[in-house]
Amino acid sequence: MSAIHEATQNALAAQKRQSVKETRQKLELALRRLANGNPTVVKKGTKISASSVAEEAGVDRVTLYRFHEPVLTEIRKINDTAPKTKLKESRSELAQTNIKMKEYRRLVEEAQEEVAALARINYRLDARISELEGQIRVRDERIADFQNQLNEHNTTPKVSAMNDGAIKKS
Image 1 (spheres, one colour):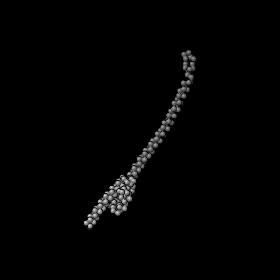
Image 2 (cartoon, helix red, strand yellow):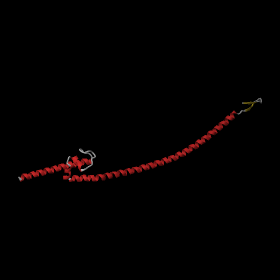
Image 3 (cartoon, one colour):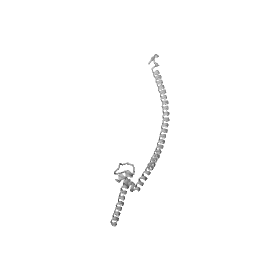
Image 4 (cartoon, helix red, strand yellow):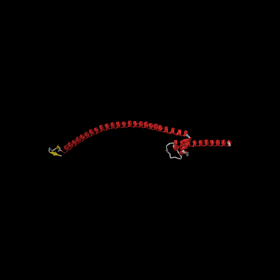
């Protein structure tokens, strides 16, 4: 009876090892799916925890805690490094944003300097236009004066001598 009993125990131990191995594979695959963001059982974006990994693998959570400490250790590592990775990414994004902001500020300052230079040019041109308009007004007044003088000169009677000695007005 002891040979049968020993064979049964060996078979049970082998079955247990095989079951633990299969469960470990299920848990590891579930953990990878969750870490990669493409789970098949739980909702996408679910936080990686012992419960979510066990649910994704289709395994009881107690089994995970009792027989699969390496998987729990991996879950802890992922959860410990995830905030650090996010912090690193956030700092990198912040640095990139700061670089862009500095560049935009520089561009704004250049544009403001250009606007100020153009405003000065515009002011000088406006002054020149006013000066030229004044000169044109003076010129137009002179022309009008000359035309009036010509008109007055042309409308005054002309005296001309005739052959017979009489004066004729035209």
